Length: 481
Image (cartoon, rainbow, N blue to C red; front, top):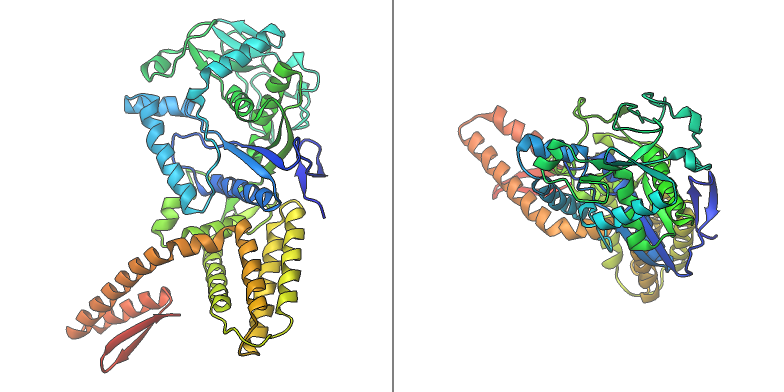
């Protein structure tokens, strides 16, 4: 079966046919770097990585680009509050974001363009829009004239008359302020914003033919994607909350400027819930990767949970689910170790066929719009059936060993979980061992002073971390469950 994606633009499953055979250009909307991204954002970033990996798995030469929005209202407000410039706010956030990507095993992008490095490209694009009568200048700002584009709304299926002055949409939060600057039409959106005093204070101002100011959010992605991938490219991704207005406005300004199609396939990731509720700062459920690591979860467990559901279906994040993710990773690691340490000898029979069937099923699931839940079901069926066969034999042939290991490698080239778990295993084991040894020492001290209640509490704490403790005449010994 050929690789198919659900294209938001066509509202249908479409076979992926890149502009240039064997090559794929992908643009992913990255974070606005004013605070660390939360796990909802990382659901999208892990999906982007899955897409990147699977395109390469299918033999495509992928150019993967993720932008960094480093000038925007929230960044300016943060810099003003801290009495500094926007670069001082964004630099540590970018460093932290890159570290988080590594923690959850996201492959590096080919480019991470920053908005502030592409101001000239944005100005050039806006000039083209003004020349083509798709944009107009008002009081030092420049606005895109939505009414100049008959097919505006083709991505989100929104009707032009539904975008009203000062009104938010029921399901797509876009409020339009009719008093902002001097708009001719309250539906129009800003391409360039005239400088305000606070923009000057935080060094978020650039000179243009229309006066000093800064870019609007939407124009940033259009300019950067076209510089990196061309005026027409293959795939644009992002969270479903970006469909309107951000991605709709990207299409409008890009196609109005060039007269060409913009991105050909649009892939959008469903929202992540936390314990069945919408994520929000006020509910304190917008966890970051660092916060989850501090709670004792590995990057591999977090990654597993985030990719466990199909990207177009809701994923409910719970700590029970994270525990299950940790257990699933452990099962995969144990299975991989069993395969790698299997005795080579007479052929067991049927193992090579099992591996071949599993690989075919895995690829079929991913070819069907990157169906991770179906692919993971194939993986664990393979683990269960292979373990049952290994239980019944004392050796496997060299060819069977190669087939099993090759299939596991193929799974991991896409899922990226085993490599990530192994990468951190040595360091994690050292830290864990030190923690266990410390707890055992505390328990021994409690027993020596006959504080058996404290000793029991420590044993329970160890048990909760899957540590089996055995008291022997030579002293306590422990192992992992």
